[in-house]
Length: 116
Ligand code: 5GP
Ligand code: ZN
Image 1 (cartoon, helix red, strand yellow):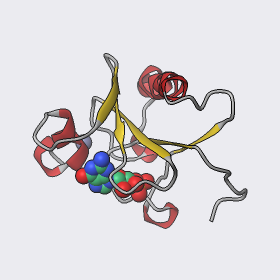
Image 2 (cartoon, protein in one colour):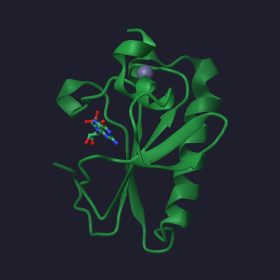
Image 3 (cartoon, protein in one colour):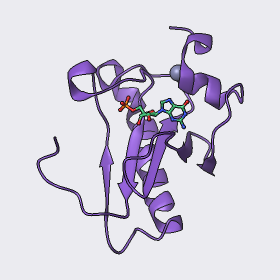
């Protein structure tokens, strides 16, 4: 897959608009277009990685930076104290529909466990 085929690479390039709420050297966070909670943010690495299955050991810092971004976004959104959920789906059976890894950050309501 090239950047031009990937929706989230196109958002990174500014070719498709997104409601960006946080940026770092390695990650971008923007609001999900179809929110599943009062706050639903997607946090993506600036480098294209298709799924968790494609991660190398050298990507550990990059993936870790997504969680550092999540913590910062949760604080910005006022979710840090009450709690929030982070999810990364891998593959179609898990519900992955955009094949550029992304951490979902959901908050502002109660969540069930196990997830559906
Ligand atoms: P997945 O199903 O791959 O775990 O999550 C993909 C997410 O991307 C979905 O929650 C979906 O609503 C969101 N999404 C799909 N297309 C767009 C878009 O063009 N803009 C934004 N902001 N979110 C999108
Ligand atoms: Zn991509």
